[in-house]
Length: 247
Ligand SMILES: Cc1cc2nc3c(=O)[nH]c(=O)nc-3n(C[C@H](O)[C@H](O)[C@H](O)COP(=O)(O)O)c2cc1C
Image (cartoon, rainbow, N blue to C red; front, side):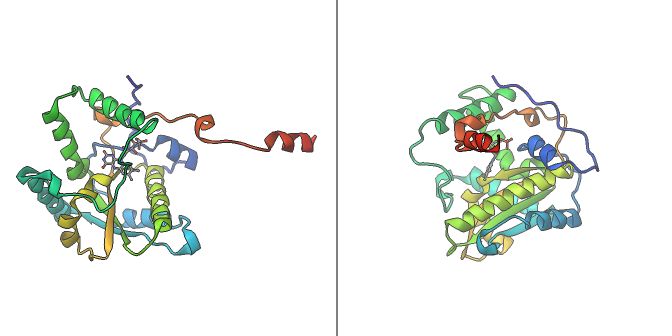
């Protein structure tokens, strides 16, 4: 079992420090219907666009939507899932390795167990698991949805740049009391999403994102995710020598 986080902090108009925004960011999977004005989204995107990119090429493209169009995306995808077969909807890119191995497999399993455990969904309860998965396509109730795309002839470097941009956006949102959930789940349905958002064929749909205000009462928003300690993923060299040199 994992520890539960406290409820997300109540709405606030004050700005958080970078440290606070980074340490309180989490993927929120239940939002309030409270709208987010277009001007606020534009400010967040302008902040995120300060992200670094190789040679400053700024390859990111963002499609932002709300209201009836967001609803149409939700209903089109859910109807397609209901019609089946699901296998006909495949993403254009592989997020994960084909052959899972440790430590990634264990981490992936843990987040699944913790999330479904928190919701009281037992192993093998396929119906409730699927119900929860479907929430992805409702943007978890968020008032704003986004789709991130890249032109297909761009290279891995641009994927890196887009990842930094998305990360910055999540932190910028948190800094203003908003929350996000990046959503690769949408990439499976690129053939359905593309015409609805007027995304040309030469753009790859990388992932989506829900943006809004977290529902402080939703148990799923208490999901506490772990991180490996710094010593496990970073190596350091030369610091002792520096200290000696300084004395
Ligand atoms: C690119 C990307 C795509 C993701 N796609 C989904 C998704 O489709 N659905 C979902 O519920 N969470 C998604 N997540 C959220 C991850 O599960 C989450 O970041 C991870 O478990 C760590 O939890 P935290 O964000 O709360 O710290 C995605 C995260 C990233 C970075």
